[in-house]
Length: 115
Image 1: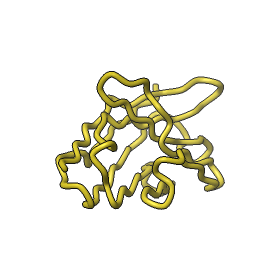
Image 2: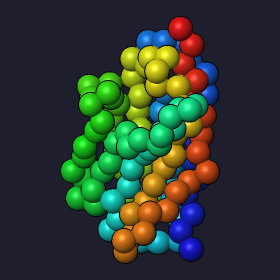
Image 3: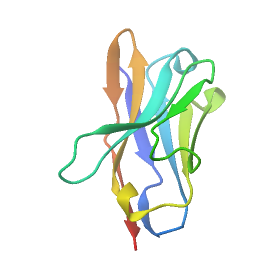
Image 4: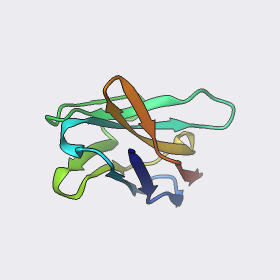
């Protein structure tokens, strides 16, 4: 049973930074791709960033140059460093793990950026 627990969300002013963490359990973490999605009120859930098991990353155009995804396989944890935050980054952020054709989701953590 895969479990993902996010932390690190909160309220920050525009231009500030936050780092999200996602701790995984119940699987061999290092072999799986991981990622972060977000969903703003009234909008569809969108992919923010993804990191492959070998460390290759990709980002949504809207966050390139501002957000960095990384992973620590020894700690079974994936991170999302978010810099130069904008009000439009306000959303619930979800961690995902990709395994065997399935996508596992965390419970989400709220990020609110005030202008």
